[in-house]
Image 1 (cartoon, rainbow over the protein chains, first blue to last red):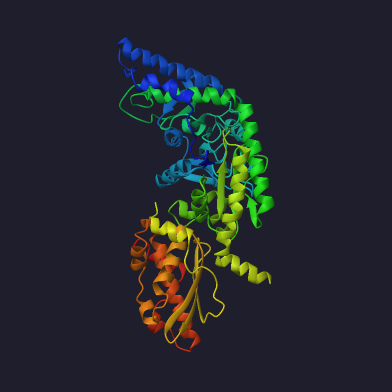
Image 2: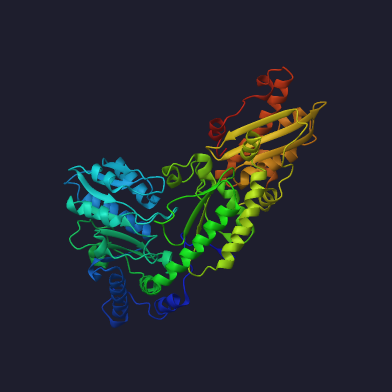
Length: 390
Length: 144
């Protein structure tokens, strides 16, 4: 199998698994217990906290472990909106956020909050001026993702965080696609809250963390225990947080080399597709994008058919078509950058990792040429296009 | 997610293409919803002598088009009018719930094509064929 869906999830390395194994087997004590069999796991958790804190420029006391990236997003948004409700009920986000963010804001609207959704340009970029203009005296939270999961666009987070700071507004960024893939330093970015998920950077599934800058007003997320400084109850996932720390350490040590490799794979793929297949377009920015992300729309065909055909050829990729989500609307991100529905339905996302090879890229392009032609040959839209041209 | 039969009809669709001598053509769905089915028929002596289709859509849309054309090929118009989306689904060994609308679209594509046949004969198809479908109506049948 050729796996190019690394934005969905990644393969955990042996080194990560090895670091987790003691806590999945012999060292099973509860970290909250008083005896040393429990306390040794407490030490492992705090070591992991210190490791990830150092890797993103935070203090250990600012790292709160969660069950996943979506949980970190939910906590950040509900926690900041509700804690600061006396100051105001206006919130700002963008139209291209992940659903783990968007659906929180939609729920808060039902609870009486007002939300401004900042549009994006044709490359998926948020305009900093638009954020500035949306601020009211009632605004308490701004949440803009660091890098988009579908089209890979990297947002000007530092600039937006600066504006939030000047206006005394809490700023959250969903950095699930960014951490471990591009340099992320919370001190440099100036954010209050930042969400992370381990399985996106070759760590285990079911663990993530929320960075909470000291002094940020945020309500408690889970009740029923003193874990995570009384903010997030629940017996700690020791193996998970240890694996996450190991994975982030490895990803950070190899960041430059991995970014370079992913960038070269992606560019070879994009050039290969655009030069060999007619009527397709690259979605997102060619430069301000995640190194491993490619998102291409093929006219006259539908994305799920494309994915099924690729799967039959042994290639695992992703799409923004409606049929992959169970709804009738294609990706909100592709619609937000101005794609017509028909073209948004025919999109393909290939997300590369440093483990992919150039031979794999060439093989995917070769298969795509055949698949796209086969699907177009059975498409009434393509037939209409060819007849219109005659 | 899909049955083997669905994957078979997706990978090797039957009756795909255009029909040069078609005397009935029907098209349902729209690009906005992500499904378009176009059916061509050659009808003689009330019998569907030949049938072809073209589909823009997901795997289920391609497979239901293929199966629907197989089920009515060689049949009389009246027999074809009795084709239901359920029959298409059963012949494919089932579809995931979110894909049921594709089978409805396939049934409507056959009806739309037969309606066109009557229209070309100067006969109002509505009493015979029923609704001439559009996307919204089809999707109102979702999950049935």
